[in-house]
Amino acid sequence: MGQNEIAAYASQHVQAKLAAHTRLEWLPQESIIYNEANMHAVSRFDLTDSSSLLTWEISVFGRQAYDEQFLQGYYHTGLNIYRDGKVIVAERVAQAAQNRWFTSNLGLANQHIYGSFWAVPSLSDVHDNLALSASQTTQSTETAQATIKQSLTRYLDNSVAALRQVIAQAQLPVYCTHNCQAINIRYIGSDVRSCFEAFYQLREVLRDHWWQLEPCRPRIWDT
Image (cartoon, rainbow, N blue to C red; front, side):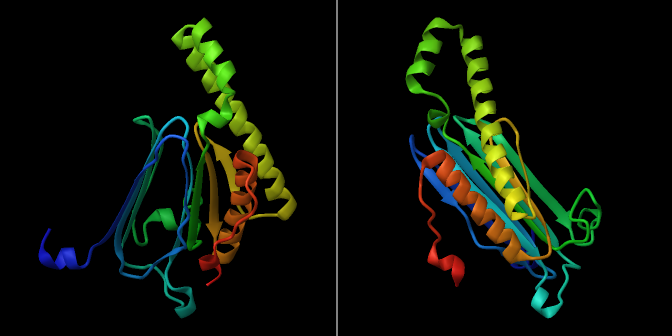
């Protein structure tokens, strides 16, 4: 890569390694992707069985106040979440401006805001420690792993049901699902405040459902 290319290339690399029984909320404000931007942003989180994570990324393509569109440039963002060295979430978007991803119904469908919110629970919260220890001593390793997987799936199913109830009641413009390891909430639209407020409301649902914590809104979010 030449000097001119380096000057035109912006990158960000976030990496966090969580200790046992820790919780991390990595919830940045929206990123505005200017026209002609050439960006590469990658995040990696390493969790233990007993740590948990809430993280999101909100991307706005073009400065809408100036009627600017993202017509030239390149957008590359990636998220990797590991638990005990094994990948449980791998999300990557790498698209040049005016690629079909921006217009296709399988992509942004001509919208200019994309948000992705991932939530990973602690396995210590999923299982009762005494019951889990008992099952591990009386069952084979394969059977114990299957029991853990089933328990985590049920836990995530219940969490998604609680989130979808709030989504329906408040008519939030997001979709919610899980991959049997983590919950994903996704927004595609044209109003960054609607995206942010939807993510905020569902964050509070998860904080209460998983951690029994009261609502807490950082002041910087309102600046």
